[in-house]
Length: 195
Figure 1: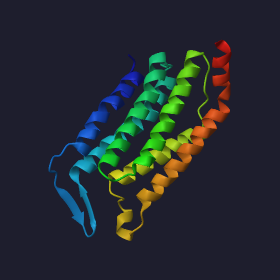
Figure 2: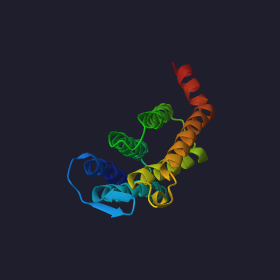
Figure 3: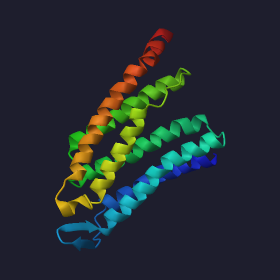
Figure 4: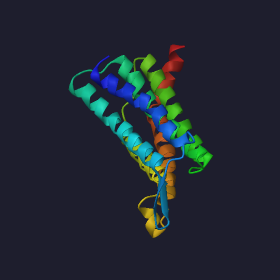
């Protein structure tokens, strides 16, 4: 259990804390400025989400820099990412801030690619990271943060950046998923040949 894996585990443990602040019915006070309104629990959840999301790059950097890459880390890292994003998306749907179909599309892609990665791992094959995968992560995080903070500061100019960011995240998510499967179809073919 090295430092990188501990950071990954911390990301997993932050998931229920974020969900608590988003979903547990506690009467937190509101901050109101003109037509904009947000609760303190949303701000806290958004800050914890930002911290958790930022650890994704940190644990990978530490693992590579200190040569701490382990099989446990290879398993936990993508799992932590998927748990974090999926939990917050489901919470946003529950709060009425996100259409359920958007969450379903994003979550489905995440688990499909995780499955593909696990097949590759079992066969001893390496799936190269895609630039689209990185853009997908950035787009999803941007959309989630904008939804968590009620479209601040764009609410003051009546621009639905949160909706725009959600659509961008969906489009990039779908494209990156297709891109992963097309570029790594040899993983499935290799697995079939082994049978």
